[in-house]
Length: 380
Image 1: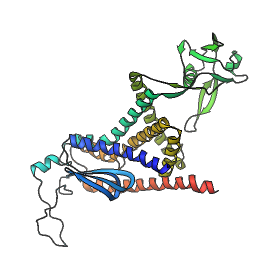
Image 2: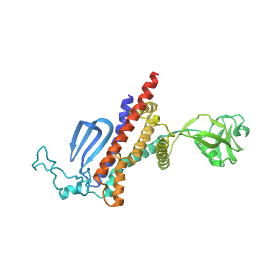
Image 3: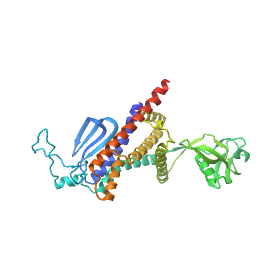
Image 4: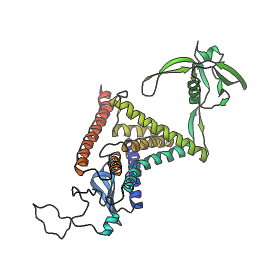
């Protein structure tokens, strides 16, 4: 079943991504020749109107083929014009190209203004980010598991214990600011910068006020880096409740969560370049399949949250300025916008080749890590 769940997740995310390109192309008046889920050999296909809709053999990607997508480069280095089927030719001659009609130019991607091309290319990643945003909004409305502020232990000889805090106390406010989630305690303590805090505690239906001075502490962040911070010495009781939000609150919370995941994704990439995050943490299809199965077995909410996380990753990664990815095309179009002329076709071809090598290298690394992680390690 894990493979089925992975196909579902990847299929939906790829569809959303390509749908962004497709809809913006149609909106800009570009003729779309093919819309494919997957790449490689065609499994099934059906032509509706001017577009052939395909399901292709390899489900790790997809594409939208637009008329004139090859790009019209001045100087004759590249030309999106179709071949003239009626022109004489032989095996040694190059294809004979005909001039585009005015109607064909109006429907050609290459003949659209550069801002229109930018919008079409950017639409795929943006749709992935919007899809994640909508999922987070829905999750906020159907209920978010939240760890309460109930204390499981006041650590011995730490500020909280010295102030008289006990097991089963519930922190309801910090400096008169109401709180109800465990992460808000950490946020409040971190914001104190070591200055005394006034905590309101509920104990046996009574409200008690205590003053605590956080002590310095060296801990590790999500990337394993040592950071200096502050702590009061309490451990959570692990009590979990479901928190619900109305539609207006859900939009705010969903937006906050989407931004957090986007920021975390960018930071993860930066830390990987800095070698803070090891390269063996990169996962591939096997890892995605395993995680999809685990989240699906945990329930619909964790499964949707996992899909939203992957959707953000797909959107952010595609915006990187790497040839072959959407971000690489955007880089060329922004350069065209700045310098008022297209990037030479030869430069684009070399860049595409380099980008393909980098992408294939990343795919090999991901597969290698998956094999080591799930097969070699287990056998050992």
